[in-house]
Length: 241
Image 1 (cartoon, rainbow, N blue to C red):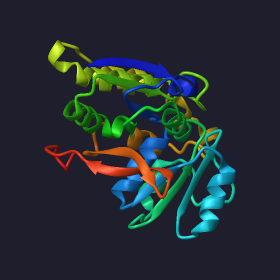
Image 2: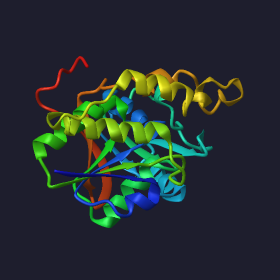
Image 3: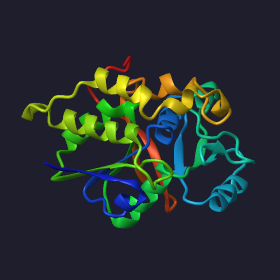
């Protein structure tokens, strides 16, 4: 298995093989909580114009929109896992547009990467287990970063952690506790800044670093010709994780 780690929207354009688009703070962490709350599927959308059009097409859809970290006016939710955990998504479709994660899904799909997964720390072990079962020749892990244009420590950490899980039999080691302690002071500071509370609520941080909480992956596919993500449970994983 050949594993490469790329970064940002530019990196997603060069994804090949089985690809994991990673956005820890906070797109795909939020999606994991939404799917745990009963969401049926999620449409990753590149532009807010298209996202609003899809909401208008079916008002029962839950619209999540973020730019610059903040909720886009007119959306039901922004990009907060804490807010998502409070909402009942049972049987509902999501329309999700963010400045990083959803952009990466769209770009990787355009590049011809397949299959495509959406990953975060909360489903990292499930993602690695899914990849091991598929046993692809090539794996691309894309750390989407801040707005898809600058590196984000949390996404690189997640990519390295998934790689370590995949290479476990080859003796790869990863001190997750030490890495998370480092992240707390090198990338997560915004969650503890009172002036940013409205955009980055402190409740989002522990939810985002609740490592391996969910025993499922988010797998990209098509629904009526549109790119979408669905929950796929990973057999053999403890549902209580």
